Figure 1: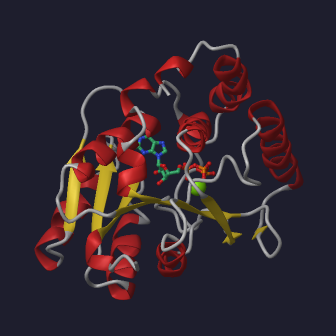
Figure 2 (figure 1 turned 135 degrees about the vertical axis):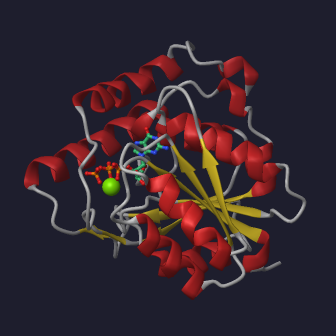
Length: 244
Ligand SMILES: Nc1nc2c(ncn2[C@@H]2O[C@H](COP(=O)(O)OP(=O)(O)OP(=O)(O)O)[C@@H](O)[C@H]2O)c(=O)[nH]1
Ligand SMILES: [Mg+2]
């Protein structure tokens, strides 16, 4: 059965997205007036959370989770998931970036695909998918990371590091969120791995991934190393396989 947008929530983690956050909020609600939107901010020094608070009176379905403690992309998503899975109306959860790399217009298609799948991905690496404006180095790195992760983990998907995901709430609720240990791109891989191990049906929908429109890039060597190491940690059993 089709999931109505009023039963779906989009989670967007933010760190220093003052230049993007108002635009992404307005764009999402213009396209889907009934959808729920949760921004999970990590005490961004640029005042991202304050901008969200300022938008809340105009958007009753806009929620802000202002985290404290050490910033973490992965923990932000996990806190957001837990908050949403406790809501009775929540049947689907979409993850996406604040910087317009993921086109909000695609959310409708991903939700449609949940009629016959548990997880729908906005994929750069299936026929019809692409990346815009990426320098050759980053293009190669992303391609190599994907092939590597697929080879080591045997994931049935082409874009294992993508951050544009749409999941049935029931599927997400069935995996042990507390057992997810990684952060950054590795978090996105570990999440897909756990969903796949749970027996979820995946479907990839081609997207064009755009370079961030505004704001500073947060790519770092630390994040890349973590992603390189994660598949082996999973395979070697260091990451709670027994709990799957
Ligand atoms: N809450 C939270 N959000 C984060 C953190 N790091 C990144 N984000 C957000 O996660 C999303 C993806 O991060 P990006 O910085 O766009 O990552 P990327 O696309 O690989 O790299 P660039 O676009 O080049 O910066 C964006 O909405 C970021 O604001 C974090 O530590 N905490
Ligand atoms: Mg980005």
